[in-house]
Image (cartoon, rainbow, N blue to C red; front, side, top):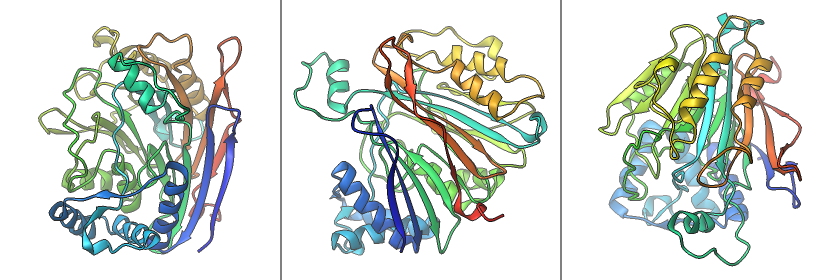
Length: 389
């Protein structure tokens, strides 16, 4: 199976080094390659499992997400383990720590100058290591050592499996999940934090049966071709949070898009587009659709309401475009001048052309001496199946 790995942005002297992995072949082969990358990059090892729960998870994946199960089989083979022994969890599941912030928007083809649907997002996250962040939050002494920032080793993963749609995804630290991505059908998904209104965070009880919050985007890209199919799949799937609750913007080239949210009681919401841009930041949109009627921000909301108003106002009209999306996202970028309780930056900005199957991203490399953020040139990644249309 062809597997290539290269650093495409940043390096040893920058805040981050971005690796691009391409893999093709069977899902098990792809899973083996990803497990080897996870061991190399993050020192990943499987953790002991509750055997009853591990078996239930394996059976659920077999029925609802066989692509993921096949990749787990590949991970088992890379480690010389028996998947069906159910002794360890063979997928890496960690939460998204409280306090990150992101912004996203979708422009339907009816609203763009070239008739092409566009989805864009800023990925905002902490610039510290996990240990240093814990010390900041808890007031503990600053840690010694040189633990790297948890967001400093992102991956772009391009897969062309024999038995499923080709995908290009971007992930911060989960090689079996993603923060955003697009498949060969032009379906695109992005996740965002959704707890600005003090939704109670769940107890982190470890892997459960169903989809974790970071697996959900990859599940949709593996199994769905349209936004309508994605909504049906989400309403039928078991889901759980590991860490902070998230919500998701899902869109396809036809103009169909929605935000998927779950309330604190488990209630599920498909917030669909009703003309114009569909926007999301870090509060539950089904509670607050009107930008003119949002609450005031406070120290813990990471400017979610202000960013939502700005994106909505700047995305009005019918002369939208990919370039306009970039301008809007840059207007709500988090940088050194943004007042937040903990160190946060916009780590990357991505703009998807859903018709063309491309993901264009620039990456945060650090701050200049004047405090302005430095970014890589914008890199364009194309879903393999669309390169020869």
